[in-house]
Amino acid sequence: MKEELDKKLCEAFPNLYKDRDAPMNATAMCWGFPDDGWFDLLWECSEKIEAEILKMPEDQRGSYRASQVKEKFGTLRFYMTSETDAMEEAIRVAEEKSAVTCEVCGGPGNRDRDAGWIKTLCDSCDSARNKEREETMKKYAYQQKEIKDE
Image 1 (tube, rainbow, N blue to C red):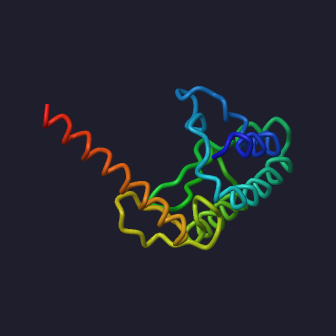
Image 2 (spheres, helix red, strand yellow):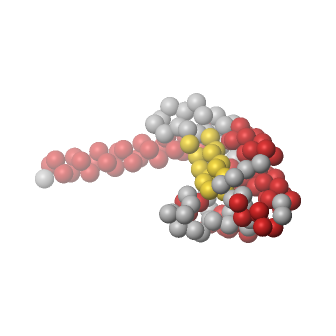
């Protein structure tokens, strides 16, 4: 995710993303967020969770933090240190929406892509990814040919 979007999430939801800059031996939040296309999903989910955290007595709020937010098998995965039923529901909704939302641009997407790593992409972003992959493979093949010819 772009740095400015990452920062926007962390500033808007300071209780939820309290560990964003903590070291990797303390949290997996140090790895950041998935691609920009899921920003709106994360924002909506984060609003709901932060509101739930703020309902709690101040001495209990620190127990409810995001411990990892990532993409896996083409969908959002959102893990908490602790969660209430309302938080769990907000996460479930965001994870479901991610299965039909392009990870790159946020448009309608699908996970039925057959190109190695499973991603949820729209047709345009999938084409761009395939073109980039082809260029990388051509470059690699050219480098291998040069090494062989030496």
